[in-house]
Image (cartoon, rainbow, N blue to C red; front, side, top):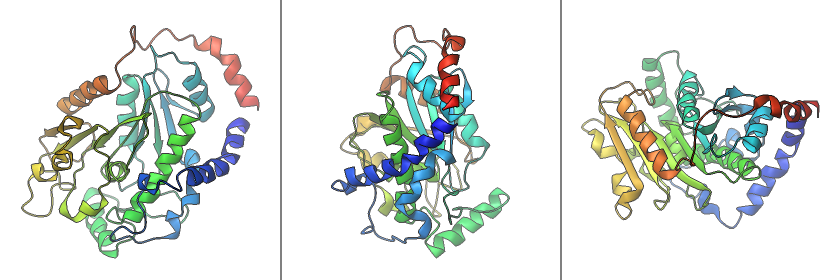
Length: 318
């Protein structure tokens, strides 16, 4: 733990370095010239410095792991066990059991996963507070009208994107594995608010969210980077305003010049639950196989954990 805490001390330098490195390429993350931008103290860029402490880590074969074990496995697992890393962002209600279930889907396919939680930033609030789905939808409308703690606010998405890109930089300092960025609902909006040009970030994953007319100003995705999208036919969190059909919120029009980079699956239902349809999971699996092909001999066995224990034990003593 001491080693990880030392790495967190260095995180202040990482976020500062990130800001300096990207000072001349502001297009990666949205800027305050965007329409409907409403700043808040919780959206300050330096609050990204503790994003690893607000994150949960998963690894193929091992499931949920603590930070030192994640770093060790990231270094030691061979390509036959580990294909890449997914940074997966939750929806407007914060991190719940959905992120664990989705992370299990990814790590069973050979991907490490990091799931940052955004609302636990100092002074932050949920985009859809409430103790049940009906209350959360109603209060999300209240937050949307207030215009600050809502995904309609580009400043919120930029703050979430700063968290994500800080994790990207942390990973890039430790591995050359392919990185994918994705999320569910508001986490999807976080994903498409990024304009990515990093060859190590090979794709975006948007689970159960679309682009409605009221959110058109938040879209910034670079369509040269492949994007997978799922939609649910009667999802009340996605298919709006009244009169909208599910096809109307597809990202397809944004990819008009690069249609090969957009993969869409529409499933029946109105649950908003991520990856709860077999056809949805099968579509994403096939897309991932195309974006990050499995290494020859890929399998989720054959790693000698005991041989790696002295290294891990040493890391825990530092």
